[in-house]
Amino acid sequence: MGLVRRGWRPRTTGYHADMNWTDEHRDTFETNRQSWDERVDAHWQSAMYQQHVTDLRNGTPCLREYILQDVGPVDGKSLVHLQCHMGMETLSWSMLGATSVGLDFSQPAIDKANQLRDELKLDTRFVCANVYDAPNAIGAANGGAFDIAFVSVGALCWLPDVPRWADVVRQLLKPAGRLYVNEVHPFLDVFDDADNGQQIEVKYAYLDAQPIVFENDGTYASPDAVFEHNQHVYYIHSIGTVINALIDAGFVIDRFTESSECGWPRFKMMEQVGPDDWAFEDKAMCSLPHKYTLMAHVG
Ligand SMILES: C[S@@+](CC[C@H](N)C(=O)[O-])C[C@H]1O[C@@H](n2cnc3c(N)ncnc32)[C@H](O)[C@@H]1O
Image (cartoon, rainbow, N blue to C red; front, side):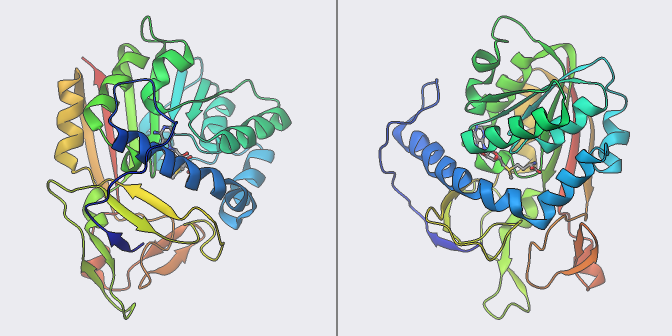
């Protein structure tokens, strides 16, 4: 991904989440939604997601082992998956016995999720809405409805306001409800490929980062795909921002883990080391954190 310009100023559009957002925020949502909408077909057809579809058709949840270990048994639990994309992880939780709801603001993604849900004959519910509108959209505005909230890989980076997000998650959860976040590590987001493709270099700010507007064709699951909507607004939210937002929203942090696990060729220098794993060859670089997991509960 490459930075095209900073100091971005928004176009105004009609789309808005049901909260007090600035025009700039509304435009961010619209820009990102258009690019996500357009990527759904390519994602559905990609090897990465078709493998998940095959696994699900064979009755195998597409959740990594460490996630299953961390979250533990979900049989009989209610679970909300925020920014669920085409719902494959949400369907996996249903397969494992949870009563699951997946939410995403991309209607094409939700359509695919519903299609797969019907084929698999699961009772997962999918809702198309902005994550900030989740309590109303899901019908959980009058009190927490869920035992578990699940957020996974590439979610927070599209959100302009982490404290508001943390508050939304808390509203969705029952007393003592649990949050599990499996996310891209924001520290790695400060790096980008150098022009020669042989190195990575620091290109973006970590602390006090401004929204980054970048243009890129392709996607992580289908790098060669060509699209019309290629602009994205991306946020690097530091770990401190996320943790403090959760604490301020009333969460108790139970565990925070960093790992070098990377599920796609994030940088040109990376090599594929397993069916779903990419890594740097250099040992020290291998120790850079690509992912983090965070477990918290409503205090
Ligand atoms: C990287 S994808 C998540 C991928 C998912 N973890 C998976 O493995 O399939 C990010 C998702 O966030 C959704 N999204 C981005 N901003 C959103 C918002 N404000 N409200 C709801 N969904 C949003 C996008 O539509 C997209 O489906």
